[in-house]
Picture 1 (cartoon, rainbow, N blue to C red):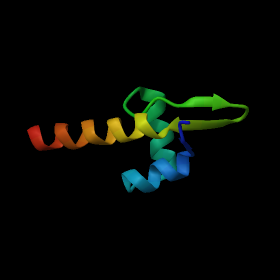
Picture 2 (cartoon, helix red, strand yellow):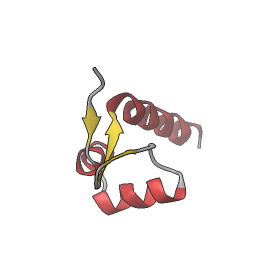
Picture 3 (cartoon, rainbow, N blue to C red):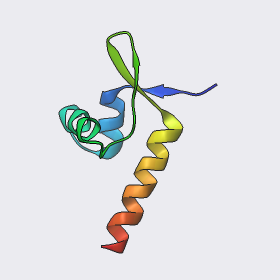
Length: 61
C-alpha cells in the first residue's frame, strides 16, 4: 500500500516552505500531486524519485 504525504511533509523533506512546494507543483517543477477532496497528496515513491532527481541535477551543475 502506497503511503501519501501532505504538502507540509514534502516541504519538510525538501527543507522549504509549503507555499514553495505548491508553486513548484503549479509550474511543473515539483512532484506530481493527487487531489483527494480539497487536499493534494503526494505518493511517497514519487517524492523520493523527485528528490533523488533534484540531487543528481545539482551535482551535475
